[in-house]
Image (cartoon, rainbow, N blue to C red):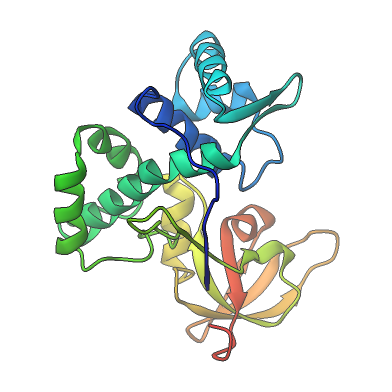
Length: 234
């Protein structure tokens, strides 16, 4: 696993934490979208289309995003770097909520959205210490280090995996019901699984997890991300 180090920086004196929150959400969404539509961004942040349009104009003026009409936005390299402290803060808070406060893994994303706004660098450092300097959030997503470097994961959705044996790297959904189901069948980060069979035409996958046979549909297979279960590359 390597580290990505953006080469551009941005003067963050003028940009606000609200701008950083938007940048962080764009960062998350562009992992699955070439461009992030303003409608999708508004939906994920639970704000109005007008609020998103205003913020995108500010981000664009600050050199943090590029906005392509009718397609959406993408972070610039400087924008990616600007977003990473918010990504780090959010994922550290998620670890704290699960490991220290004992919240369910399906509860922590919206809670972290609220709590991270009141956390300064000092509290963040204490959370990092208390949780043992974690490298991944409870859902398996990597946590940027203090220098703003994001670990690079060589993984992808189970639905597109071309092998037979795999290790679950992360669970990529914020849907509580779906997440609870995925954890209930054992497909949590770190779990080893075997693809027993695939139904044609994007049909369900039959998996063996911890010796148990389970059948999952495309929606679940899209949310479970895996890497090759190979100790030499792990």
